[in-house]
Amino acid sequence: MILPHETTAAPGGLLDLDMVRKYSMAGPRYTSYPPATRFTEDFDMERIEAAIAADNQPGSGPLSLYFHLPFCESLCWYCGCNTVITRRRDSAHEYLGDLERELVLTAGRIRRGRAVTQVHFGGGTPTFFPPEELARLGLLIYEHFDLEPDCEFGVEIDPRGLTEEHVEALRVIGVNRASLGVQDTDPKVQVAIHRWQPAPLNRQAVAWLRKAGFHSVSVDLIYGLPRQTAASFGRTIDEVLSLGPDRLSVFSYAHVPWLKPAQRIFEVRGELPPPEEKLAMAAVAHEKLTRAGYIDIGLDHFARPDDELAVAQRSGTLQRNFQGYSTAAGSSLYGFGVSSISSTADSYRQNFKSLEDWRAALGAGRLPVERALILSDEDRRRRVLIMGLMCDRRLDFAALSSALGVDVSKEYAKEIAGLADLQADGLLVCTAAGVEVLPRGVPLLRVIAMRFDATFVPGPGRHAQTV
Image 1 (cartoon, rainbow, N blue to C red):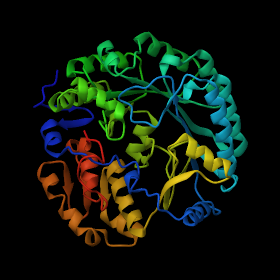
Image 2 (spheres, rainbow, N blue to C red; image 1 turned 30 degrees about the vertical axis):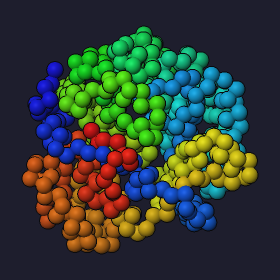
Image 3 (cartoon, rainbow, N blue to C red; image 1 turned 90 degrees about the vertical axis):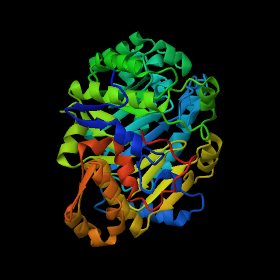
């Protein structure tokens, strides 16, 4: 076990728990800037339509498509996703009818011929949908969009309900990447979070995916859950490594009971691990994964050295969007389904979170937008700075000044000066030429990025803890 006061050294860098203790706080995940908490219901739909039109002029870049498939058979008590709990399989058929309406509405606004380089099915549980419904969704996508031959086509999978027929249907429509929701392999933890998932289900899912020729298999884990300890989570890491995943996402549990009331169960039972134990779990995961040869991509993501994410990080082309780290450089994101988010160069918009409201808008022939944001010039500049830190771990002032049309070192002198404490603690180096995040600072990328966030308001009830 890695003790809470230790610093763990590994090929991927350093995890200094003293620095994590000092600087960890509640803050955005920076899947966008401004963060989604700044989206507003007070928006002008004409400006959103204009942003979509501007995004579809000749010469516009590639597309990334996201489909939110929200249904789950049961509620995992830790879950922070937008889900619909039901065992009624007809829900999938009805939902796809509505998705087809949204596809038609949106595709009519998109310049035909734009290359689609990334597609992702998220949830909920995409594999709640029967194989024939997944095949139907695939046909709808190909009918309205032009997918590149090497399109990165991913799906989130719950091994508990997966069949080989699901895998075959996904393969036929071009899905080549899968992310398995595992969270934890300890039976005591699984009972505590209301997610019973025996290890043979995980092994069977991976075997089917490998047999079908999926290019990449990823595993999602969460630390900080009820009844977890550093020792038990270390065993989970060992068991998952035996599956041979290409990537891992090792997320810090986001305790947001003001948004997800089911999480209050954990407070009533008093089974959440204390902060020191949670930090020890992060240390164990980092040490085991980097020693196993995985590259610390940043913000809880790990990948094999030859994986596209690791390659993108080395080449400086890593991107960040609402699905996390991505290789889909320069693409516009179009989201479909309840609660999904879309983004263009100067706008964000989010669909209704309520299934009823989303359907009502589609029934009226309108894009089902509930919240949106038009970015100012200042927003766009700060987004470049924040994403530079989150993805490249550095800021080159001269290059950024040329790209943004302002003298970055002067325009953001206050923010740059505000990095002094981080530099003194060895998290980054700041010179006249730029900023470089050091390995010790990588676990605190969100904290570093916050120093350039003009929208950030500290306080409880807005964001989860950064670590």
